[in-house]
Length: 531
Image 1 (tube, one colour):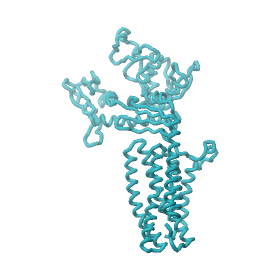
Image 2 (tube, one colour):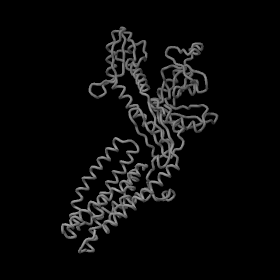
Image 3 (tube, helix red, strand yellow):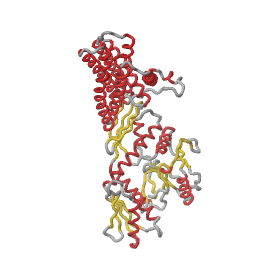
C-alpha cells in the first residue's frame, strides 16, 4: 500500500499535468490564445449547436430519384460497352427508359449473345451472396434486351449515393469556413446537418439543396421552332429552360460533364463583371478540346441542374482545358457557384424536410444553466463526502476536481464537441465519480470493524474495492460504447462524455487518491484511523 515507485508517481502526475495544460485554453480569451506559440496546446472545447447556436437541417433523398439516376448510368454503360465491343460496335435501336427498366434492340441478331455477355461482365455481382446489380433478359421482340435493376442493386445504389452525398455536403460546408459541422446519415435516405455558429439557414439551404450537376451540350440548331413551342423536341434532343428566359433545345448526350472539373474560382469577364472560371483535369481537357475543335461555329450550352445558364458560340477550339461561365452574377452568387462546382455534384437531389435555428441567446442560457448545475453538483457532492469521510472525503474532492479538468482536457485535445446532453453526462459523471471512493471508504470501515490495523485496513480496502470498481465501470463503458455506436447526435455526445468520465474517475479514485493516502500514512503514521 505504501510502496509507490517514483516512476509511477511521476507518470501519474505527468498525465494529470498534461490534461490540465490541454484544458487551460478553455479559460483563455481568443486574444490570449493567439499569443501562444505553435506546438503548444491551444485548442478550445468546441460547443455544439444547442450551446453555441446555429442551423439544423434534415435532408432527404427520394429513392425514385436514385433509381432514375441508376437507369441513366446503365444507359451510359450500355452505350459504352456496345460501342467498344470486340469486332466493331454493336448497333442498337429503340433504346428507352421506361417503367424502371432499360430496353433496346440489337439490330444484328447474330451479335445478340455477344451484347448480353458484355453487359453481364460490365454489371458484376455485388459481392453479397449471388446478388447481382441488374437482371438482363431477352424481350418478346427479336433482338430486344431488357435491363432491370434488382432490389439489391437499387439498395446498393442508394447506400452509395447517400455516402457520396455526405462527402459532397461536407466539402461544401468546409468551403464556407464554418467550424465543427455535424453531418450524419439518419436511416437510409436522410442526412442531418448541424452547423454551429451559422445563423442563416436560407444560405445553407441554398448551398446544400443544389445538385450542382454541370453539363456541356451542343445546341440543336436544326430543331423546328413550332415543334419546340408545342413542347416536342427532335429525337436525341431535349428542351431546357434558359436562365435568361425562353427555351433552348440541346442534344441529350453531353460532350463533357462537371465530373472532370478540378477547380473553379471567382473571376471577371471582359467587362469586369463577376464570373466563374473553371479548369478540367487532363482527361477532361482533352475531351473539351476535341469537342470544341469538331464543333467550331456551333453554339453549345452550359447547363447547371437542368437549366441553361449560358449558350455561347464556339468561335475557336478551346485547347487550354479551362473556360469561364458568364452571366448576371454578383460576387456572392459567383462565389456560391464556384463552391458548388469545386465540391462536385450531388449524386441525388436532396430536399429539406426539417429545419430549425438555435439563437446564440438560447445557447448562452443553456451554458449558464449547465455551469450552475455543475457547480451545484460539485458543491453538494464535496460537502457530503467531507462530512461523511473527513480527511478521506477531502482526498475524494481533490480527485473529483482533477477528474473534471481531465475530462475537459481530453475532450479539447480530441476535438469532441460539447453539447447540452454532454453537460448532462458531465454532471452525471461528477455524481458517479465518487462512487469508487465510497466503495473504498466503506470497505476500509468494514476492515476496521473486523479489528485490522490502520495500514492493513487501508490496503485491504483499496485492494478489495478495486475489483468491484473495475467490474462496475467496465459494464458502464460497454453501455456507453453501445450508445455511441447506435445512437444519434445528442446520444453520442452523452456517451462520449460518460465514457471519458468513467475512465478518468477510475484513474483518479484508484490511483490518485491511493497516492495521497499513502503519502499521508507514510508521513503521519497515525495509530488510529478516523473515517
